[in-house]
Length: 145
Picture 1 (cartoon, rainbow, N blue to C red):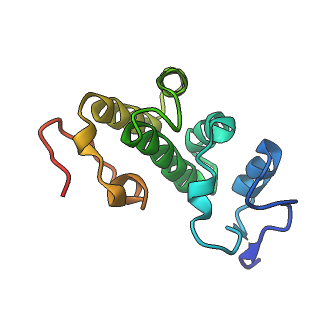
Picture 2: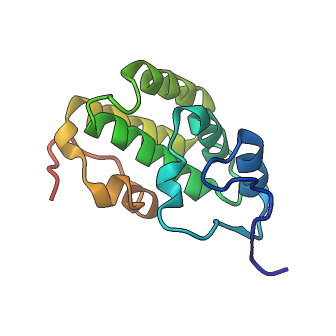
C-alpha cells in the first residue's frame, strides 16, 4: 500500500480524539494538507491522547505525537501558562511518569527543565521538531540561540 491522505477527518482542523487515534494508528495515512496542522493539534483536549500515542512503541505516528507534546509544553511555558495552565501541564507530566517510556520520559524531563529555566525555549527545537529528530536531555546551562 502507498501513503494517502487520511479521509477519516470530518474537519481536519478540529479533529476528534477518535479521529486522531484512527489516523495515528494507520501506517499509510499522511497528515492533511495545509500548513502548520501540527500547531493546531496541541490542545488541552488532545494532549492526553498525544501522550498515549507517543508512549506506544508500535504507533506509526509516535514521533508526530511526541512532536505535538513538545509544541504543547513549549507553548505553555513560552506564554507563561496563558495558553495551557500550569495545572494542566503538571497533570500531563504526572501521566507521563506512569508510561515508563524513554521518549515520553525525556519529553517530561525537558519540559520540567524548561519550566525551571524558560530561556531554554528555542522555537526550532520545541515547535519544529528538533527535540524529536535529535532526542537529548536539555542541560540547565544551555541557552537559546
